[in-house]
Image (cartoon, rainbow, N blue to C red):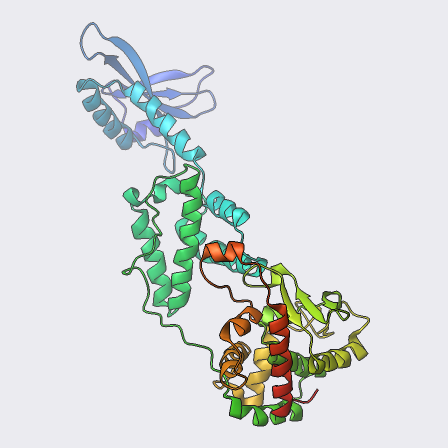
Length: 411
């Protein structure tokens, strides 16, 4: 008589393993250790001339990887249907194992992310943003160990990617959602390029996928507002450090991005040539940039040198927690504390330089934009046009500094 589930529980181990039938050619192997294991005995081909074979179903019990008696019997019914259809269950199990091994060894999403970041040619600060986005937003949702080929478009990857993007949009971060899609696109491009997954890219851009985010331009002052601004800067009602106030003055005269200006080092300045060379890793375009030194700019630098000359950084700050120099956000924070929130940002002085440089100083826009480290024309021109126009840029910078002094800038 076949055993029931309650009978299975009381089967005791012996010195050697033994087999007990539970019906329908399904047996339980009882091991000396007390473990119990389901085995199905079948004939293949399914006729009298077929050979008897054993199919290892799995261990008896409850929980992951284990089988109850009912589950084992249901599995026998499924396997028997395959057997009668001409499929050898044991061979199917072998193929299933191979497929599982293949999936287990397929490159993971984490490997694709790490490979993409390792090959990225973006500057360190941008790469840091990409890393934070992938490790903190993408991988926790899609699964770092997920085989990357499971995110192929044909396997539902597009839906999962868009669902992640829409969840970010749902938090009100429209720009962040578009940026996240762009970073995922680069990661999947890396995987496709290496044959880890099939195209198309599940994070490809489209009009439908793009959020309704409308970028807002940085506010900037009008030329006529500068006298009042310089009065407020000099009065320093917020009580900022002298280094921060002087950094704002350098910002206005050079209209550099905060990330290029704040980490300035004394060794970057060549006083014989009157040039400040900013290394490529601090420039958005990834190319070294030269800033002609003017009289007013050198006066501000001399003030900084009078108490920071023994430091590596021009804008050294003993109160800095993250860096030994002022943080790039210190510039914007001081402008806000001065009462200029909504009126200008640090980036707004780039708008001012380009606008007033043309309207007030009558300088050609290309000269100003070259001093802003903007690129021109197509890739062919970018590859062959190596002219720096440093003479014209120096003339503009001198005129710009002098005009700022006339508007009230004190150096």
